[in-house]
Amino acid sequence: METTYKKIENELEVSKVPEVVEPVVTKYKLDFLKEQELSILKSMNDFVEQRQKELAEVRTLIAEAEKLGLKTSEEIRSEKVIEEEKLLDIIN
Image (cartoon, rainbow, N blue to C red; front, side, top):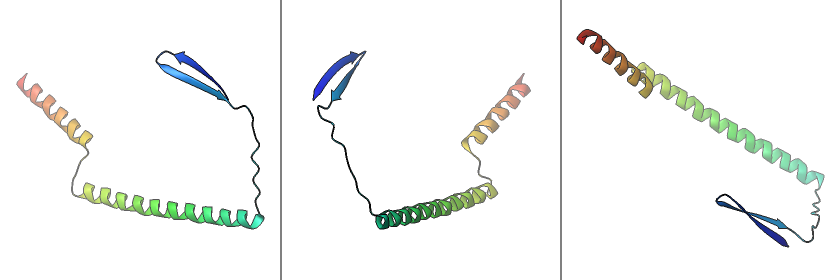
């Protein structure tokens, strides 16, 4: 295997060229591929279903927090800035 090194600013670039490239051959039976397809689809559907449940829960929590009058940090900062500006207007 041939290896070359090159300095690029503060990095070392290493290039390796294999001497012999061997092809990789994989054989698949149609039954296996169809089973894989079903397994992947089920896994994907389960994942999406779980994320949908989590999203619904988060949205419920957001709705409850807003009903209680909770505000985001940005909303609180904005209100403080407005209050400070009003105070400055009164002072001036």
